Length: 409
Image (cartoon, rainbow, N blue to C red; front, side, top):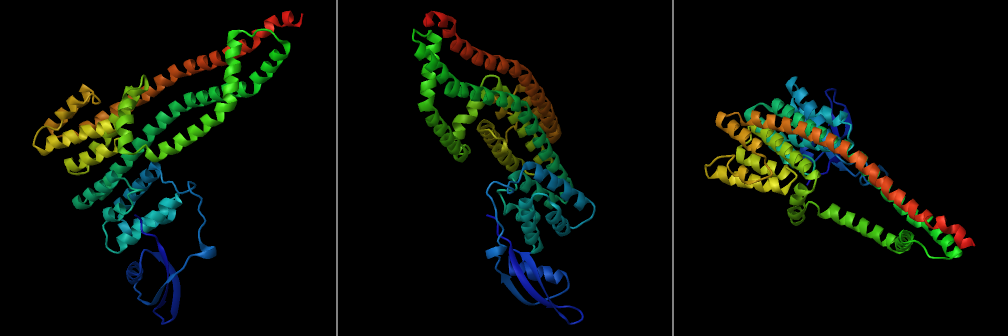
């Protein structure tokens, strides 16, 4: 869990012997003393300052405190650029803590800077914030520190995160239109059942006569919606709350993740996204020098699908016993034969990271093409479905009007 940054008030004597007071943020007193000594001064007094009362920052949960993958990509890219330019890690972190747009991330970076200042390695300081920095990032930075190529590792992390952000953006943009049309269709149907159908039902009741079967069904649905609508709405809200808390639990994932890959039309898309994420993360970690067994454990957990995670466990067992890396993959249908064969070639030639990068690029393009095809196919289907539902309801409402003159007579 992250250590909260505290505010300390210090008093020092400058070179002229004058007493100078100031405030500084750090995790503890040792960090403050270390920072002041790097400035060539030693504190005479040092006290922690309470930041309660009117100075307490007001926070609204969910607003301004969310750190996205894009924020981490920008942070990695900027940190790599500054380190490559010759700046020390401590100086680079200080600059990032001041200029990072995300206030939540800036606060975490300040805490990381304080830990590095007290002698911790960058990877160790980042590991204290597992809710912000993913294991993939922490382990790659650790490998870069050991190998002495931290700047190149940070560039690889930035490219990996940027590719992931780009992939997510493509899928979201492709799915936006169908989701919006679907919501409009539901609202239109509910609105007609709650507000329009009852008016026609009262008019038909006053006129008397037998209603056609489609109109009767529509009136029954309208009556049910008045009673069952609120119950259904509450049930949906409760299910949404439950899903938000339990969707990452292993028992839920064991049932839901395999179903995702079997869903008609969308199952293929989910498979391509999972394979692209797996190969990209795996290739990036191997290229950074992370041990293969450690990399397998991490990419399995970050693949986003329990089916991929099980496959990586089988691969890890195979490698641990001295067998082939790609042998167990052929037993899992989630990996297409092309992926297995290309990984086998990369393993034989010693260029597995390069081959994994090529596979990831290929499946990124496949995902883009699949989302475009889905959008092109879903748009006319959704329009036809929406028009069919609304049109059927209108016909059912106006069918009794065709006999209205007979009822008046």
